[in-house]
Length: 428
Image 1 (cartoon, rainbow, N blue to C red):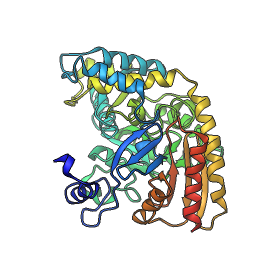
Image 2 (image 1 turned 180 degrees about the vertical axis):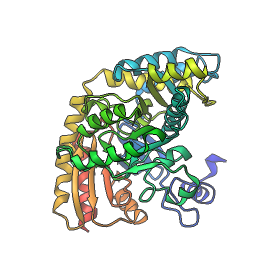
Image 3 (image 1 turned 90 degrees about the horizontal axis):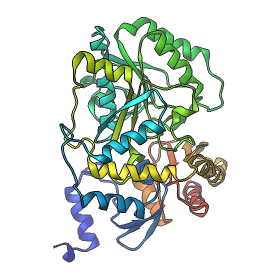
Image 4 (image 1 turned 30 degrees about the horizontal axis):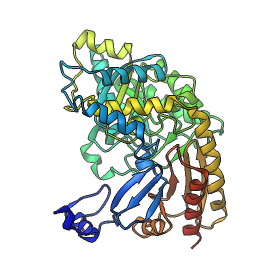
């Protein structure tokens, strides 16, 4: 059957059968059929090659079809593809946990694997609530978080996303009502605003007896607007959490593994969270896997009182995914990632800065391997996406943002082509 279908047949079946993310079934956005991918290029079934500016939603940091990644998965596949993690364990998971603990801040000593970033957030929230239950503070059931945040599409994760300007406002009535504060003031180098800290202090003073944790994306609020803020806010938030007996949770799913110029965004600050979520680039974009790391206080607090933590995904610590992650982290460790990403930041700045001269553009900003062109008005994805494809680039904007998060192995020439494509489209 497959050999008998044409490219158009496949696309027609896709339109008839498949529901893509954030897409209407009745008026779907255009889909482009992929034939292969190599390095930083995606080749469509019509033969057109696209430079990938998205790292497939920020995950394919080493590029596509990497031989070391391929070999790691093949080697593990020849042994076994999966075993349940209840009562059994395996070397890929043990090696991965060891690598994660060695590369993250020292207080993080325990690792819980899950299937996706959103689920790792669910795990973090459950950890926080269960920890306080074991400390005879069962009223601590809620969370405080900044607006403009995004933490995933499952229910508990949605409850700590921006309730008004985020993607989940229509579910507000079905979600746990959390405590929201203003988003951190923007600007990496902008001095800390005492009034913002006073707002946080007020919320914690009034409600700390009900708050289990404070969850935040460190340094960059990603899907909520690609907002960069002064890392020193994290130091102050850590102090406030300690003062009011609240666990601090960092969502490093998008920022982890080098994306902001440090191995983890928390390294821009002087502190460590109680719980950290990682995902996306963990496996180099090869397999779905995430992890929730925590300290001994939380892990042993739950275990010594309740005995068990109440969560257990069927595909927890899938061996193929763990093998991919081990290979990905080894690749990260074999090069100076901070130097690589610093160079990429320079390239992105050079490529995107010309857009500042264009009338539709409000701001251009870059941090690490993140480049953002913010517009004055939202754009029509269905209209702009095919134009980017025509120019030979894969860029997927949202709202008022056209952004780049390319693979770390991309060349300066390809970054320039991505930037030129954005300038050309906006200049039309």
